[in-house]
Length: 296
Image (cartoon, rainbow, N blue to C red):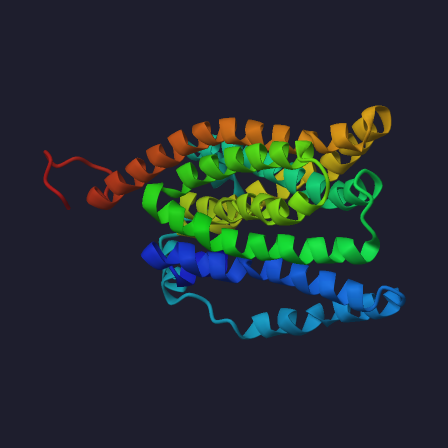
């Protein structure tokens, strides 16, 4: 995400990041197909998974952004250091805290849904493994389209606002999914849920844009990785509730996670806007001094 933000700053950043991260639903669709194809031989499934090493090695050939390298060199020449603590200074500390909570809720919702939806469909709605694979493929196709929609909406109404709309849309779509009867309608509504849930691309875009270039990796990385605690807690929480009250009740935690995330999104939006204002002032006054209103 930080590499994408360095190479495609400005108006192309949203589209480029969405294009890169759309590989998630493409991979999910591919994994569903592979699992369906080799359902009787899971050794082949893991063998295909091992091919991930190839694109990982190709990342070695991605060049560093020239401007980033120049800024790092200039910073070193000045004798100034930018460390991890920078993301907890001034207004950025509020951006970091709210981004972590928003990320936590996203991770919680994604993993609760991904972990327990197949079990719910098979145990509560009677789907077979083969039919479940078909459901997964169409769901991930909906997610693929969603990545581009939310990134486009972010350019229209700002990234944090797109994130807020997407969180509440996901919560609403998931409530409809749970109460929808039968399985035929679920086949067509599933892609809508995943389309809405693809708003997680806005976490990537918003976090990368919210932090200055030199601490972007610290900021975005911290928000993502601390937020990943949600991916550890939520499947367990959903399982506990599911064991006590049934899988439907457990799966109902998903819209709650997203609704709460949407509420904290308002705080994130406020402090991201303030950070943008502060950075604009620094551009106008690079020496940190006022000169009576004259731009420097």
